[in-house]
Structure formats: structure tokens, C-alpha cells
Amino acid sequence: MTTGTVAKTDECILCKLHYKKIRASINLPALSQIFAGRKSASILGGNTAKADADRFSYWAAEPKEIFEFRAGQKDPFGKLQKILAKYKIEQDHQGNHIGLPLRGIFCGGWIGYFSYELGQYIERLPETTIDDLQMPLIRLCFYDRLIAYDHIEGTCWLIALQLPNDSQKPEDKLSALERLLAESQRTGVQQPLAADLDNIDFAPIRCNMDKDYYLRTIGEIKRYIYDGDVYQINFSQRFECDYDARPIQLYHWQNHYNPSGYAAYIDGGGFHIVSASPEMFMTIADGVVRTKPIKGTRPRINEASKPPLQAKQINVRNFNELLCSEKEQAELNMIIDLERNDVAKICKPGTRTVIQPRTIETYPTVFHAVATVAGQLRKGITFCDILKAMFPGGSITGAPKIRSMEIIDQTEPTARGVYTGSIGFIGIDGNACLNIAIRTIIITGRKAFAQTGGGIVADSDPEAEWQETITKARALLAGINSVQRGADSI
Image (cartoon, rainbow, N blue to C red):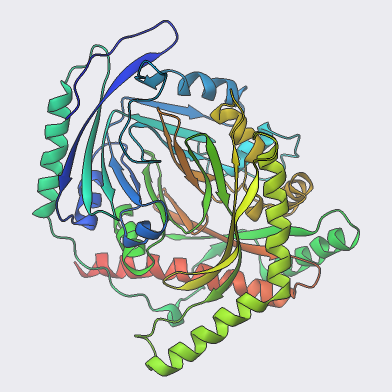
């Protein structure tokens, strides 16, 4: 455990980091359930897919401070910069952060989300969509204690920040975290019911557009493409259904049946967010920014659901189809170029590069085509500078980005909100990791909202695009249905 002092300067509050490393088995669902029962909980990960993503899962609750920015207010980035600068981690004599001995780990600070419509404060965009959910555009919680789990090493890190005038000593904070960890070992979580994807009744599902509207709009988008306005548009529709179970049960279901590398659970008080996102928007560590867009998806069959040989044949066919698709290659290349341009705004000349060219990655239910773009940040660049240069991610707007966002606003009837925004952490040491909030469900007012979409290009088939959004929605709605069946049986 580290020791030391803290001091408050005129510029910010300096925090001393304290931590304890424990090598022990961990009950991931139980720990998530325990934290979900505490005020304003935030969970990042908590499933096995983290090992192949950013390595760490995090659990935090009972924040010291909450920052919210809502539509109609002014100067979001000025307010955000001020709140992010409020707390800083202690530095050594060379000006290096005294943090944990692991690259990129969250050592305390802010967890929350940025809604897609925050982009309206970056560029001049129309505002014609209906914001019926009325959620904050930004919501961040400052946590002075958390549990981190290293999925590679199999170790837990109990992390606490010592602030001036703390009511608790840092060792007491660490002891409280250790008790929660011990409690999770004694807590059982019922395995969620499996989904029945083939029997989802869409009759009670409400949508923000009907099929005729969707198909007509695809035609309009293709005209924009033919006219040279854009190369690609990410167009989506929103589904709504009743939801009576606890939000954490849906998170358990997603983590069990669809473990995703950038999953997140956010308790916003009057609403909850359950995200099963596989897509990383950005990471910041050691002065390097990275983004990893996804463009191109094919289904992957669970070999337990079909005869193994048949499942293997289908998976090989789908993998190779995605790998060789010229259309999918072109779509990802467009987004790589877009992201390279975004990164160039904030990085040192000559440092931006595609560090991972197009690669097909395997996930529990799908194959994805991904690439990674990175660059060395210029001196003096702040998190807000990075956000303004890159947000929202190009994979969920289209290209060129600004014109694509204008068309999205004109064609989608309701505000996207958190969907295709970003969820994650911003550490007081400058490290950050945010997802692209796809496969993300909002739960509010005993209702669940799920939104799905896809990239529309010149040769897109409207009927096929419609079916793709239904297929994606079916997977999300199946989880909701299974959780509610399980809740009814208790």
C-alpha cells in the first residue's frame, strides 16, 4: 500500500493514490450485483471478453461528485474542462504521475457517458429530432475508490484516492473495498435464461418509424450518395418495449451470453444504461491516442446450437465472406481515412498511423472487421481538445462526418441520446478509455429502448438493410425477453 500526503493548490486538488493488490479468484457477476445495489454505480466490463480488449474491468459506486450537462445549456467543453481539471494525481519531481505500475489502467476519476447529440456543440448542425428521453448530454461521476480486475494476470486492485479533508482514511476506503470483494465470494447469482431468438414477438414492440418510412429514407440517402453529398450514412431506428426487471439482470444476461470487450453499466438515478458494445472509440495512455472503428459484420454460429460440423462450415463461410467483401473493405477504408483526419488535428505531424490494418476479429455471436488508428498527442492537448476533434466516432456517422450528421438529423425522428455516443472513464492521471455505445439499451420509466442501424452505401439493398436492423434488434430484445421471463419465474 502506498503512503503519502495530499495538498490543495489554487489550480486543482492534488490526490495521493493508495492501492492494494490481491491475487484471488473473483466472482464477476456477484461483484457487479453488489455494486449495482449501491448509489450511482458504474461498471465497466465484468466479463471474460475484457481479456482481449483493454484487459481491465472496473466497479465503482457512491461518487464524490456528479457532473451533468443538459441540452439548452451553454459551453459544455468549457464546463467539462473545468471539472476535469479539478482533481489531479500527485506527481514526482520529474513531473511524472505517481500512478499504478500498469499501462492504461484507471486509477480513479470520472466514469460516465457523452451522448451523440453533444456533436451539435462541436459543429453547426440542425436540431430537428425529438429528445423525448430528456437525458443529460454528459453525465460523469467522480469516484475516489474502485475495484479493478486484471483479466490477464487474474489479480484485483483495490484503489483509493486520498483527498483533502477526507472523512475516511485511505486505509479505511481500501478495507471497505476488500469487504465488498469478500462479500461477492459469498454471493450467488442465478444463471440467466437462454434467449429464444426465433420467437421474438414484434407485435408489442414500438418503433420510432415504420417499415415504409425506413425504406423511403434509404432511397433518400442513396440519392444523397449519388449526388456526391456523402459516401456513406449510418442510419438507425429505435425500438421500445416494456421492462419490469432490475437493470442489473439484463447486464448479467449480456455478460453471460454476449460478453463484450467494452460493456458498461451506468446507474443514472432516473435511468440505467446497459451496454454490450464491442467497439472502442478511443484510448489515451502515455500521450498516445488510439481509435478502433468497426465496419463490417457477419453472424457467428454457436457450435452448441447446431451440429458442430455444420456450425463450423457456416462460420468459415461467414468469416471468408466478410474477409473478401469488397463492399465491406471499402466502407472500412472510408472510416479509416476519416479517423486519420480526425487524429491529425491533435497529434504531432508524422505520428498518425494505421497500427492495425483491416483485421477480422471473432466475438461470441459475430465476426467484425476492425482497424486501429493511432497518433502521438501534441504537447498541451487536453481531453476536451481530443473529444472535439474526434467525437462522435466516424463508424457510426458516415463520411464525410459533418454532412452525414446533418442527414442523420434530418432523417431520424428521435434523438439518439447515448446510442452511438460514448461510455467509459477519464482518469485523473490523463488515461482514458471510451467505447462506441452500440448494442446499448436505455432503461427508464419501466421501458427499455434499443437502437440499431447500419452503414448505407450506393449499392445497399433497402430490404436487406431493414432486415439487418431487425436481426440486430432481435438479439437485444431477446435478452430483454429472457430476463423478464426469468424474473417472472422467481
